[in-house]
Amino acid sequence: MRGHILLVDDDRDLCETIVEGMAPFGFNVSWKATAEAALAALEVGDWDAVVTDISLTGLSGLGLCERVVANRPDLPVVLITAYGTLETAVGAVRAGAYDFVTKPFELDVLRLALERAVRHHQLQEEVKRLRDVVARATEMEGMIGTSPAMRRVFELIDRVAETDATVLITGRSGTGKELVARALHKRGRRAAEPFVAVNCAAIPEALLESELFGHVKGAFTDARSARRGLFLKAHGGTIFLDEIADMPPGMQSKLLRVLQDRTVRAVGGDREEAYDARLIAATNRDIEIEVEQRRFREDLFYRINVIRIDLPPLAARGRDILLLAQHFIARAGAQFSRPVRGLSSAAAAKLLDYGWPGNVRELENCIEGAVALTRSEELTVDDLPEIIRDYRNTDLSIPTVDGGELLPLEEVERRHILRVLKSVGGSKAAAAAVLGLHPSTLYRKLDQYTERGHDGGEREVT
Image 1 (tube, rainbow, N blue to C red):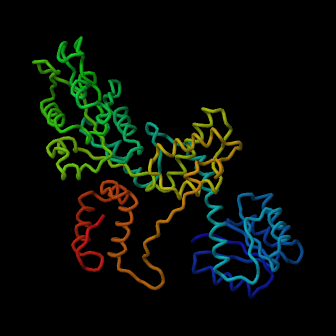
Image 2 (cartoon, rainbow, N blue to C red; image 1 turned 180 degrees about the horizontal axis):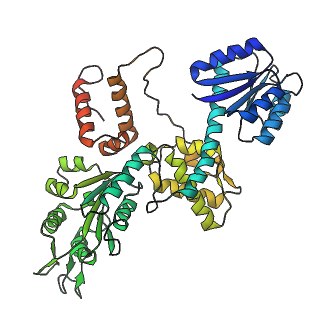
Image 3 (cartoon, rainbow, N blue to C red; image 1 turned 30 degrees about the horizontal axis):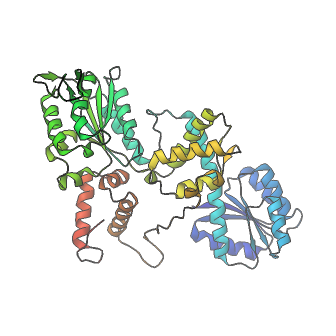
């Protein structure tokens, strides 16, 4: 059901037409003939919007609107009027109406107004609920989320944290891969020992070996003294190799030997030294493709891909976007000493519509900037960055049942899988995480779609 609507009008025929006309679209419409009866119903019912004619016996529709706005400011009111004049519009705005519709009207016009009003109300309710959720949330090393994909991530972290199993974390930039690595470390038996993080993509190839394995004095021109490598500095704890798929091929073979032998040899040295550190690796690339294209060693991939944790992109996490936004609002508000409580429903809608190519990191920066600039206790659309304010979602829904086409369940599944794959930029690992499928299951289904094609012919799935 899309929403529970209270309709107020003394025209019985019109009310019955609206009740019947809105039902196929998921609206449960109850109607009253007077404003007084409507106010009584508002006291005991759970409503998503009020639709009222302006001309009522007794208290007018404008008067009813003012009463509703004063007592239930979260409940949108749509006014129906026979006079679409400027004066009427001004009166509706002054009374606090969310929208108004002019008689005579097509049912589709009212339906669109109700869809907007109900979404406005439900987003306001969601924002209020999220304030309470964030206040009570037990964070996992800074990660919060209630989406199915994130619940699976949290469950995996809890299951493998106490082990020493090697973990490979995959996901786009900004999805929180290092947070997952730190959560694994802090919730495991090595929590009191060092956590050493290294970004393999940020260190030049000539220095990476020395950084990881150390060097002896005189090993190269600038080696004025011996230096222990990060594997030895992580002894007893965890070493986190971020963006491991960016590691040069020559270093990949050396890393494979280190992981197999559990010893390191410093650059320029002739002695092997044992280390005891748990390995966690991460990459923002589709690592299976890297292996297939021979840019990443297959044997090293199998060595690090013992436990796999796939992080979904933010756009695939649904209402987690608002949950995270509320979390960042609270943190930025404390940082900047700003009394910002939450989001307006319009701002929340913009955040949900945006694609978030920069994922959680982009959302965090967006909210931090908005809190720093806002002049109110609630972030509005005007406080958001221009790219988000002006964003228009042009991604069309893939139809399943549109009234003229009844699809087999297999075809509904195929369309949904391809839509999710598109929404995560073609990453099969991310799509599998969002869909709750084992990666091998997803690959098998995609192979079947490639063989059959959309219309039975050959085609590539992208």
